[in-house]
Length: 392
Length: 102
Figure (spheres, chains in turn orange, purple):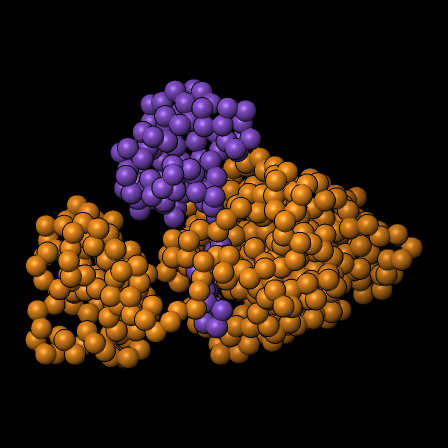
């Protein structure tokens, strides 16, 4: 599909443009007209992190005229393994400011529009309406569905990329005849099922690879050349360097883009994804498992209480930092139940409290009567009990 | 036939990226898979036995939902079944006022 524009309304190229984009101009698929289309184009990058970094960089390099950036986060050291638009000196700085600085250094003619906000149902339509294409580089399900629905409602193509550990997905949603994200995934997974990069880890190069695919797709849409990923799901397995393609179809019964849509305005996406702000009582108990704070555990251990602390992380994590607990990696727990005492209070911990919660629930199902989860995991212990413990 | 297990679900399939199954239909293949990996069953299927909506099943490169016989479709030894869950990269679905995890 083409971002339609009458050639006569496209901006002229300056002498600087002609010099800068010469390698594009001599390519039949771009040429003067294509470069003018790029200059006229307005692309919104939702997220300036792992996916957003290469995406924004290459769109700026290609001569996209206006880049909108949405981010409300601040640069952290752990970002620099993959979020290459940010530098070491930017740690602590707003991602938007850091990104803008690098993009404008690369391409001073670029018009950067910063949206320092969390995209929400209250602001999404208003923010997206000024752009031609939206590139989704976000890191959570509620925003994915929000961006998707907003794109369908506004008829803006959604260049999609997502990653997990060393696998990625890419496609183009919300084109006129193509499927939208909800055609593929009508419902989000329950919270906690799919771990975050912080919990599950991510190969740094992966968002680079997938973000580049997104940038490519955005540029192709602007130029109206090549075959877009609309109607196809590209699967990337970086570990084995395998690329696969699956067919995607528009679902005629899709609630947002189908023949009889039932979603005609933006909804509460947190609720849709099953996330409800926790009450104090809920914080103390999750899925029937009592949550122990690190302070409470420290008190009990200091008091000499008979607590069996189980660490369900991987051996390499134990080597980085540990609190002296018994290590049984999560996948081994079912086979090694005989090493976990049924008669003692068992406190399960991991890095941040998510894996341990799942294992605690599993143990409870296996009949363990006294199991607790260490809320916040070893990270909370490092924050509140032992600052000398290495965080990772 | 081979069933590809996506990364988020590998912990429930003994850590394996793929599983070799003997089956004559898709439904049989899934049954055999969850039979030998019961933890996978809860993640893939609802209590009523329906495939969860955030998981897609592909026979080779076709979405099973759109095959005329759906899960009753016959499979050959060199067919593959892929389980494709939704992934959202960086963060968990976070609470509205909590900082985003990247």
